[in-house]
Amino acid sequence: MILFFYTLTMKLNYIFKKGGMKVRILFSLLGIFIFSLVSLGAANKISTALVNESTVVPITHELREKYPIKPHHAKLSLDCIHCHDGQGKDPEKFEAIGDEGCLACHGSKQKVALRTGFMDSFHTNPHNSFHDGLAYHCDDCHQVHQPSKNSCLECHEKELPNWMKKVTP
Amino acid sequence: MKKKIFILILFVGVIIGLIISYISYETITRTGTAKFCVICHEMAPMRASFDQDVHGGTGKTGIRANCVDCHLPHNNLMNYIFTKAKNGSIEVGAHFFGDVDTFDWQNHREGRAKFVFDDGCKKCHTNYTTNEKFSAKARQMHQHYNALIGTDKELGCASCHAEVGHHGLNNMLNIYKPEHPLYEKGSEKEKLKINEKLYGKGSIN
Figure 1 (cartoon, chains in turn purple, red):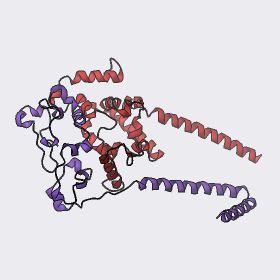
Figure 2 (cartoon, chains in turn orange, purple; figure 1 turned 120 degrees about the horizontal axis):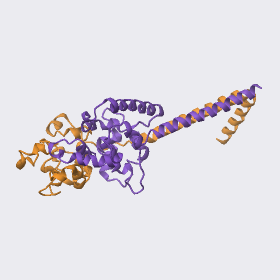
Figure 3 (tube, helix red, strand yellow; figure 1 turned 90 degrees about the horizontal axis):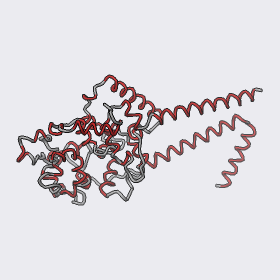
Figure 4 (tube, each protein chain N blue to C red; figure 1 turned 180 degrees about the vertical axis):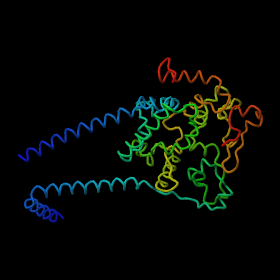
């Protein structure tokens, strides 16, 4: 290897001496070009090296019909496994993930309450309820595989349109 | 003689090149601060919520990002300058000839993955897939994001991080433009208070 580089440099030296300035400039430009190509390649490799596909439960058309997901989840191309991980591979046996499951992505009940915090001064914040504070469960209103229900409507049907949308996401 | 002229041209060329680079650099950086952007960009609620965010300098270290760090593409310089010029001209038009009251900001947020540029986020958040301080769920979802890069389902950072960079954006927008009648009560007063903080006393902006 060392010998190879040695002979290469000797040969290059010979060419430089014979060709003069122009050859030297050409060679350095070529060197810079090759260097930038190599670094570009390396940079691309680093960014693609991060890609790692996780195990996915295949979602059939029937499965999607039976367990439709909300548009804001569908937009993120979520798979069953993203919520039901560690629950095996049979979708029929998946269980509800509860508050803890939802909050794994949505943060905490405090955070969710803060998102709608402008309602607090009127005591209409559903995530920081006038009646029960943070004690409600997510699925008291929000459903993932079926239409959600706005529980406030049960008592406040008349005034609610002044407060919020009737349809819960 | 010829050699001398060549060296002189080279020298003058380098100086001119440096001056032009310096002027362009200064123009690009000085027109990239939040203070400059809000002169034309109609976005008081966005600015106010940015001031409440860790990206707006509320963190322990006080590091503050600029609008352009997230809202302009950073993949290549030409694209950056082109988008900057394009957005700028649109906003100047909107500022002088548009009606702020007709802007539907909430609806606009639906397209947030398009106007928050991920290469900007990833410039600082380089270890978003491997950072062990993140929860397992966060790392799993970031892998999901990575897997979709280059597909037609590609996500943006802001697809999930809905209020990133603008802490309490939903609240702020509902002060400036209440979505439901109940919250119109007192919103004008609140708005004035925030505007005063943003633009100084006596401002009508």
